[in-house]
Length: 144
Image (tube, rainbow, N blue to C red; front, side, top):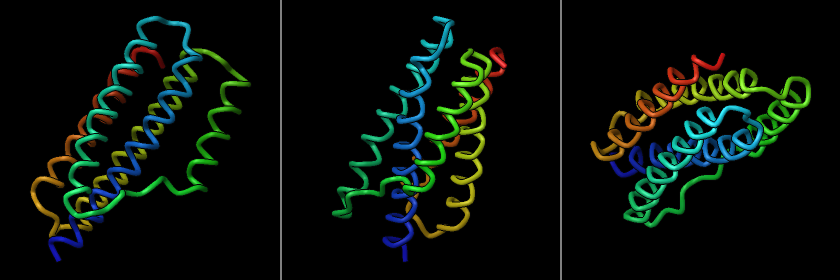
């Protein structure tokens, strides 16, 4: 059970990090504020570092992780494109990213609770990701 829950939790973290990196990369180019661009870029780098840690954890179980659900990716891309086409400004970018962070926190907390038998290392990784998302959401408030 520990093995099963650990792999499942790490897969969900992997999927979330991949989604975050993709979204952060997409919106950063639409920022007008150098401060916002730097904040998003630093968050993208943090996500990549944690993603590497997740990949190492999954490799220990001979698992390749999980790509985000194609429908979720498509909906995210469409929402980003539409919102930035209508109002291409820092407030829109901050709003989009805040929504993404909040969805990530909600999903990750659900997975942490769902996969209770996961090992402590994977739970710590998931909690780090929750903390990163919550921190970014808070930092983005200055741009809303």
